[in-house]
Length: 155
Image 1 (cartoon, rainbow, N blue to C red):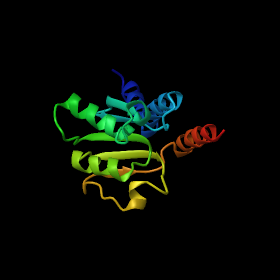
Image 2: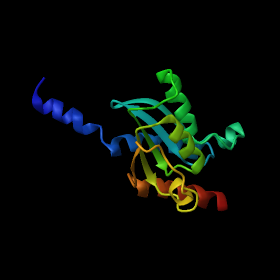
Image 3: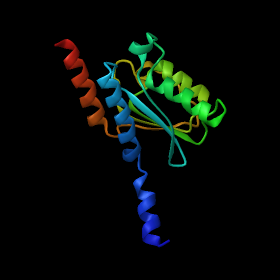
Image 4: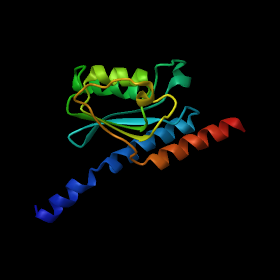
């Protein structure tokens, strides 16, 4: 395998690459009439779980994209801890989801749009001390989808 090929493969797996996959999940939620939040969990550049909001379908206020994805990843890995995993989510997690992420000991969270009224940072919710957070990846795309959703609801 040539060096050029290896370098090209490594650069494909960026935060933007994986956030686009989370945005695909958000679009599925949008089409289903759910608040358009999508999430995926990745380990070693491999998507092991994906999900989107299901609160309306399941009639369950806890059925957020992050909660669905945490459960799927834990089932995939066969354990409750998500060390060495990264969550990509289109909207800043709420305090409920941040609490679950704290207990999962996830290594990294990458989110798109901030949630200035209900996000974990506004609410002062703590994440696990070893969790790295990256903010604003494809934030405009995530925020635009959210704004379109609520504009359609107001019609």
